[in-house]
Length: 284
Image (cartoon, rainbow, N blue to C red; front, side):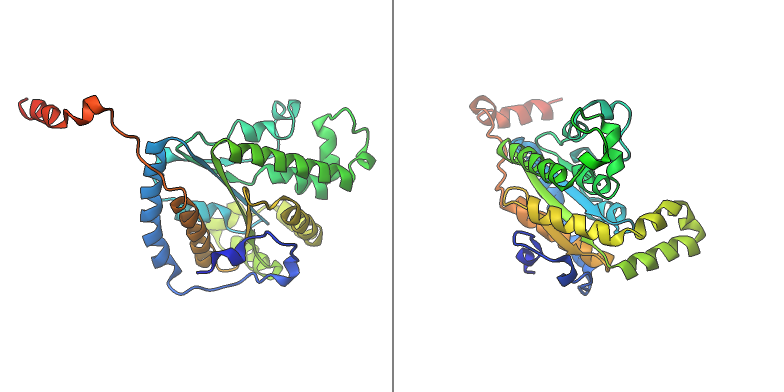
């Protein structure tokens, strides 16, 4: 699989990028990859020098929750931490916009998954600039102050944030689950047609859907401004969920294999006495 073609490192137009690819037997292929991912995470934990931050973004119904469930189900639960960011709390609004994301970062040796991310601060707030007023930023007096320059500055601050993470041992991988408007419609209808899925439907989904073009503009802009070599964006065709999961898993596996994790070397005092330790235990 040519994984580079999914990396967003050149100026791109989302309208030119396909949203549907179908890979045969994607579920079976993913099952094999999960075992390799589990092994690599154990090695990463043993080495204790690297953390991994996976950022998932996408329109409603893009498949973030099910992707997390299916891709990471074989990894030791203690080695993965998932954080879903909702509307900022009163406490979070008393800090800068990156604070709640910083304190949720994975420690070295673990994989952290942000289900919706710090990019909500240049997505939802850009589509709904009135939300920025709730952050009580001294320089922002009215919605008129929340202009393109404001968000361009905020994206540059995000670039600095991610560069800082990369320089201190966190591998940053960002995935935009790219679905078509038609596929979102189908998935919303399934939520309405299936009683067991009704709870996932919100009237707000329809209101946000009407703003599709605005969201696509914001996504396209942030992909072009914030995809960097040390914190790349990958645009994943997501109309077919099994394929999307497999592509993401392949990218993660390829990235982890390149880290060449090495288990810590045993102190000489222990390595030279392993047989003695075995003998002591066997005598019990």
